[in-house]
Length: 266
Image (cartoon, rainbow, N blue to C red; front, side, top):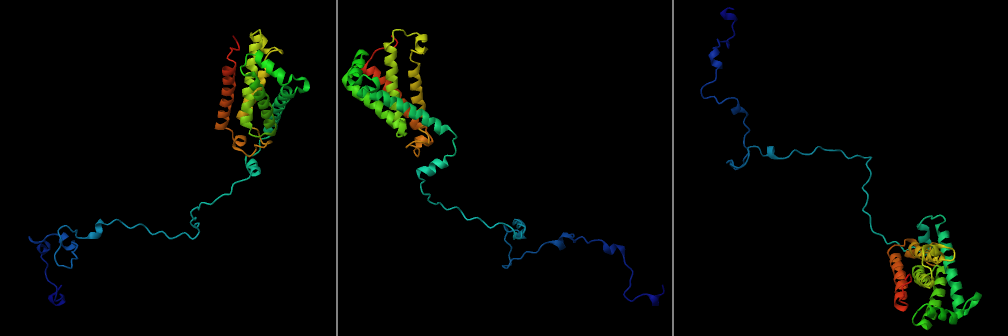
């Protein structure tokens, strides 16, 4: 290329001109982040770029137009108490259980009433109050005159309450106490205390059956077909039934021990 064709600004380039000088600090000098301090003096404990220490913002989520609306918190409301019929329906179907309980309850109650009337009035071939008092005296009971009226009245009253299904746990407990005394008296009056004499038809198995029926009615309750249908011991018998069972057994055994005192199997 001739001199007249060379541009005026063109010149020879020395390769050593591209080498950095001894005072050059490197590329990092040009990429340093400047401080933005309005006071003109940087604070030593403040980072050069404060946003570097902040947490990253959460991603933005657009609201879902199809999402369900928030449900309002539940407010306590007062529920009116259910009557007896509604509580019975709420208990659910029980099949034939209530009918079976009715038969057991009414059957035991009817037997108690019949035998109580025999003792009190001498009906249906009964001995009356005088004959009943003589039997108690022969069996060794103390205060036989008072016990005659108490036993006959308790037998009739408990039987009527069982038939009606009213105050069933207490009525069954009274019947259980009376039946325990009748069983102990019958065993004490028997000359033979062997197991065979106990279970033969002329033994005491029918009295044991009545005792078990009374105890079962205490634990199961009267069922739906009775005046106690809306009460707790008819719908869900539990603690009260156990207490009534203990009461019946305790009164029956205590009555025998305190007023008779004889060993029934001795």
